[in-house]
Length: 268
Ligand code: IPD
Ligand code: CA
Ligand code: CA
Image (cartoon, rainbow, N blue to C red; front, side, top):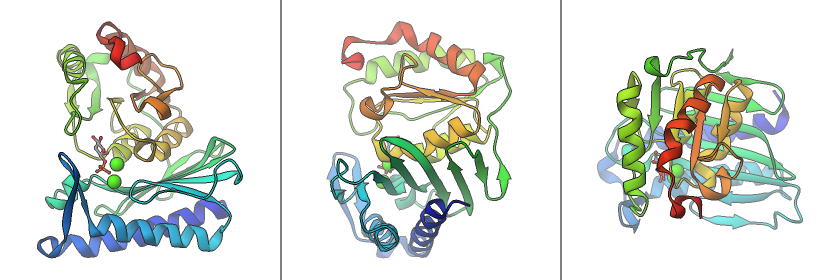
């Protein structure tokens, strides 16, 4: 394993330990509200601090973009930037619903090079390094081979915090739902993307995600042979947060069903 990926795995496992311990005593947690339906607990902050301290101890000059504490260091001066979501799926975590993850990605000169998504309740570790494939624990990952849209299991995220694109989203959902075998909304986008890489879903789409939700998952998918794009299949998804992913056969079919529902606001 590349030494940088190894450090990221160490950080993700440390955060996973903090999350697992806290999950046994959810009643004791101190929770606050960042915005409407946007909760943060002391676990998000403690896990993030642990991750950052492990990464910066190994690589003091690297810059950081983390969900809870924001940006550290100058990404223009440092060639390396770590993108961190210490707990993706906080709402699930707070409800004892075991579907959440730690997501850590490294960009080198703007290109994603290493990725870890760790599910601490299932102890599933998803990793990828550019050009070296994607793995779950020690096993190589490949996206699914399904090519019939009607046989596909598609993951998504329902809007819950920001509802400006709700009508467009519901129109997409309404169009996709009868055409596929099933739709799932488990509640951790980073883990959803890891599941596309693992072939558990054949495709995925969601609107309005943040860089820390998707950076690691995107590298997992491309290294597992899948495709990732924005709502038109282009590469602005890290900026827009609107993302479509899938195995190479389903990716295009998903884009085609989404296309009639694109609005001016979504493309802005
Ligand atoms: C959220 C999860 C969820 C997605 C949201 C994200 P958080 O992350 O990834 O699946 O639908 O858009 O914000 O807030 O739990 O880290
Ligand atoms: Ca998140
Ligand atoms: Ca989070």
